[in-house]
Amino acid sequence: MKYRVIAFDYDGTLVDTFRFHVNTIGRIVRECGACASKEEIARLVGIPLDAIFEQTLPKGKNEEALLKIFYQVTGRI
Image (cartoon, rainbow, N blue to C red; front, top):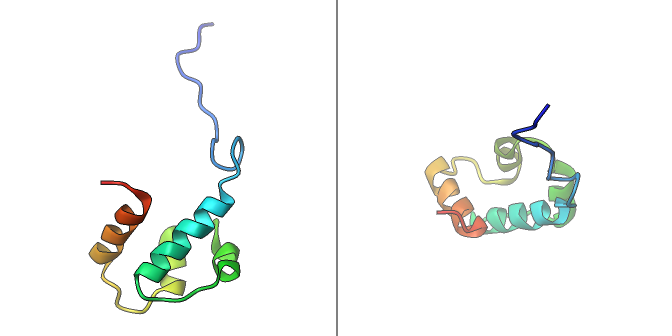
């Protein structure tokens, strides 16, 4: 049998990206004007991003503004 696709879990399996997640989420939180320690953020890594931001960002933060900050921080266009 010839395989056409090989799939694997890159995040956390081949590369430890935990520190990247903590630093990136922390930067997004700071850019939004909130404050959370690396320890607080580290406890939240693994749950969905919307839940993390709900717990760390000021209430009423515009989702469009949050996405803009996310893309600026992560380098996405």
